[in-house]
Length: 241
Image 1: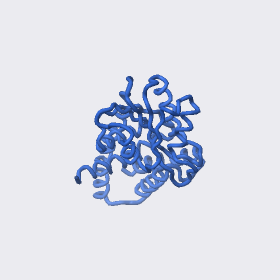
Image 2: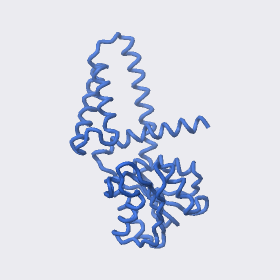
Image 3: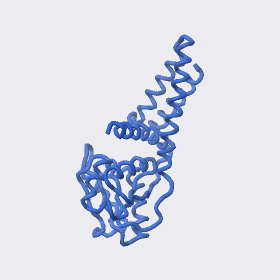
Image 4: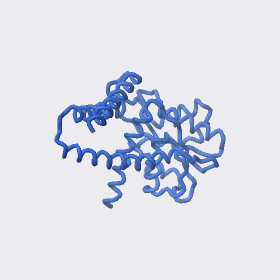
């Protein structure tokens, strides 16, 4: 068991250092989780513990890994079975904008939307995202500008610029479409798709379709772990209702 903690802790620290090196930031999105997880594992691996404690930790870790795998299978399922037909409207979910510059994850969503909109020229698009800290303009405006520069007519673009979360993205976008009758495509990164569709159905969307975009492979594991906690949070809230 000590070897498990030492190996796992070392791998977590190495991944954290890779994220820091790649992003040039000590606290890039959720990266600190790997530093903390690595530190806890290394501490458990280096600290002498009674045999009964190792028995408990072994059972706890096994249960934790099983639960993690179950949730991650659900999350990963959102990356596949994409929409290959025309829908009435697509919603591009917002992501962070730095100043006026779109981030990598958001650019991947927009590039996917451009491909779809050029394939189906009658489909309209809602770009959804408000203005948060560090953003000089709303995410919706930044997204609309990117789509227009890529050749999408401004007449097809609807800006929803008040939302600050995935749930608000979908809730506020409802006033620009008919979620119970129209076919709606959700455009977001693959790791985010399962949660987005789960929330969409809770918000009353009846005919939703996946249009998953890619994500940065270096950050993929980081994104999947972050989604694990986000999905579990939603599941717990659903059980309370």
